[in-house]
Length: 188
Image (cartoon, rainbow, N blue to C red):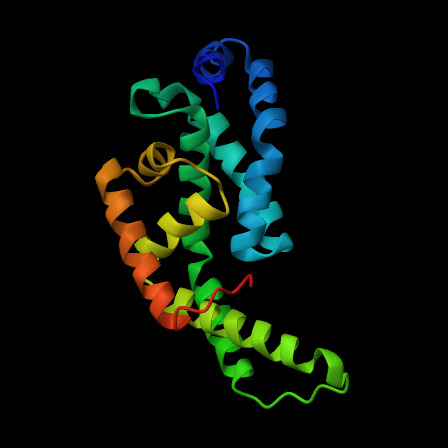
């Protein structure tokens, strides 16, 4: 995201204080990306609620937006992440249920694809279990960077932490995920 867009976004928030219709431009610009991020965290039904509520909250709180604390994009992702925290219990319950379901034996009739399916399922199951085992802060950091496609600076602004904290969390998470996957590349 170029600095020109960042400045334009901040200007739109400021101008929307007296001309609320300007905020629609930000909605059009970021809704799909924010929805996609929330969908990866919560599923499509939860994403609808989170994305819509994030923009409603942002609109209501636009007078308190401070461009010195980060970009509009980071601000929106921070609001969405806080809303996702409200859904965290369901998210973690889903990870645990998936992990339990993965322990159940699976019978595959297609013999030619059985090995590939088992390897992919095993890697996925290990990854999901590892995600469930991460602290909420580490999981948020990882998913903002990977699924939200935020930079370290944007992630730091979204979470209200120093950029170095983002880097150290990601380093720790990478080690944990590598260990959980036994150094297997899940995309190979």
